[in-house]
Each structure stands twice: as structure tokens, then as C-alpha cells.
Image (cartoon, rainbow, N blue to C red; front, side, top):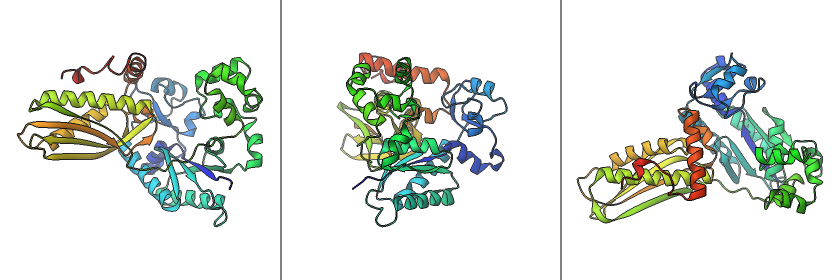
Amino acid sequence: MERAIVHMDLDTFFVSCERLKNSELEKKPVIIGGGDRGVVVSCSYETRFFGVRSAMPIKMALRLCPEAKVIKGDMEMYSNMSHMVTEIIQEKVPVVEKASIDEFYLDLSGMDQFFGCYKWTHEIAESVQKNTGLPISFALSTNKTVSKIGTGESKPTGRFEVKQPDIQSFLNPLSVKKIPMVGDVTFQLLSRLGIRTIQTLSEMPVDVLQQLIGKNGNELWKKAHGIDENPVVPYSERKSISTEDTFAQDSIDIQGIQSILSGMVEKLCYQLRAEKWLVSVVVVKLRYANFDTETKQCRIPYTSADHTLLRYVLELFKKVYTRRMRIRLVGVKFTGLVHGCHQMDLFEDTEELISLYQTMDKIKNRFGTSSVGRASGLLK
């Protein structure tokens, strides 16, 4: 049975949400981001015409497009809208993977004989747009790589299908940078070798690519030929990442316990960023000396930032610690995970803070997770 894999992507998602609130922003250049020292989180197609891109410093973006309106953003609204879209899609599709806050993979394999996969996907997209007001693009093909590239080529509000016999002819003229796994470093390396289109890349011997790029050479060669066996992994709110600490002696040292929580959050956030997860639910667990156990949780805007998550964790700890008793155990769990990058949550972040996180993660990658950390997490 031939696979039928759909990639759906909400067009300029954050900007589209803002336009739902304020219709005067329609067809105007809009930048979502935080402050003069912040970066562009998202931008409208009108600003992209001037060269504005995500993760660009706000100051540079405004030099390129001075008439753009900068909006700080409302991550809570974006999270709620994302959940709404997720529910609409999950009601209609048997297997859905939520790849990030604004993109989804759908496995419709076998449904062609009942509905017609393209027709079914088109109806889902129309349902999303009708019920939320958000524009959405999709591409249908036989695997995740081709469908994702197809969505990018069809935006905005694209409706696209790449059938099996047409895959190679569709891919060939495109830049190698269109392949999802090709980052700036790999692109520069391939460009220096004169490999700029997917067709040229596909004609390279696989063993040569492996020598140039390493273990990813074979995977890159397969993607250049439109081959991708990766399955659509069903999205589940139950996915979580957690840690807890049972004390050698029961404690009532609140400052010390808050320091432990700070260290826990930092360790979990490093893991979140390494695995490209964003969190939407925070849970704090507490066990008293008499073994009574209590938990508190809250839903939050998607993030993987230490300082944001630590604030929620400490607030929850204050709410859950209601007895003047010694504490035996504390724990932190992050759940409601979706794949995504920290740049989704930069509304209060400066370029310096972003650089700090990136530098700390690089140090931990090289010298170990205990090599650098927040002072508040070291006061145990």
C-alpha cells in the first residue's frame, strides 16, 4: 500500500492570530518580537519581501522595513489557538503528529479507497480555516520530507499534491537548503563544492556524501531521492520529562528546596532544548515526612526557557506547600510537549539572553551538564 502523508502548516501563525484580534493589520507589514534589543519571532509575508526573517534582530528588521508594526505578541493566545487547531485535526484523522506549535503531519494511508486523500485533506484545511479563521497550507505526498518541502513551496494557503511518479522532477530544481535536515553549515559546505540543487545532490555517489558529511550523508542522499521511511508519530499530551529528589533527611529549609528546584529546572530545560521540545504544562510534586503526597500543575504558553519555567515552578511550589511540615521529596515534571525551538518564546528575551542560553548549552555539550549553571541552583 502506498503511503499518504500530509504536512500541514499554519501560515505566519503568530501574525495571523494578531490579525484575528485586529483586522487593521491585514496586508500590513507586521513583526512579532520583543523590544528594540529582541529578535523577530515571526513576520508577515509583507515584511519578508524586504528581507526580514525569523531570529533577525528587531533593529535590523526595522532598518529593512521601517514601516513595519512591531507587536510583542501573546503566547497564551497562540497556545490556545494551537490547541484548538489540534483538536479539529485529531477529530478527523486517525494518526496525527504535532511537529510544532503550528505544523502537523497526518498519515492518511489506506483512506484513498474511502474518501480520496487529497479531497479529505482539503476538507480538513477548510474546517480549520472556517472554525478558527487561521489560514493553513498543506501538501500531500508519500513521505514526510516531500510533503514538508511541498508545503513550503505552496505557501501561502497552498493546496498541493506530489504523486510518486512526480517526486524527483518536483525536487530536482529546488535548492538543497529546502531539504529539512540541511542547515547553514551543511549548505555552505555543499555550495563550496558546487552542489546547490537537489538534482546535483541526488547525482552524487552516496559514499562520497558520507565522506563529506559523515553519518548523515546516506540519509541526505535518500532525501534527495525523495526517500523517507520515518513514520508519523501520534501526538500525545501524555509525553513528559521529569525529575525528583528524595532527601537523605527530611527538610524544612525552604530556601534550600527552592535552590534544588532551580537546579532541576535548569537540567530539564537543557534536555528540552537538546531534544527540541517545548512545554505547555508544568507540574510540581511534594511529599511530606508522613508520606502524604500532593501535586499542583498549570498550563502555560509553550516554552523551553529556564527563567520562564522556573518562575512557574516556584509559584506552584508556594501553592502546594501548605503545611508546616518537613518535606521528604520534591519533583518537577514538564508535559504537554511538542517539538519546536526556543525562538518561539522570545517575547521578553534579548539577543544577549538568547546568546547566553546558546553558549551555556554549548559548554554543557562539551564539558558536561554540571560544568556551568545558575548560581541559584548551586546553593544546595
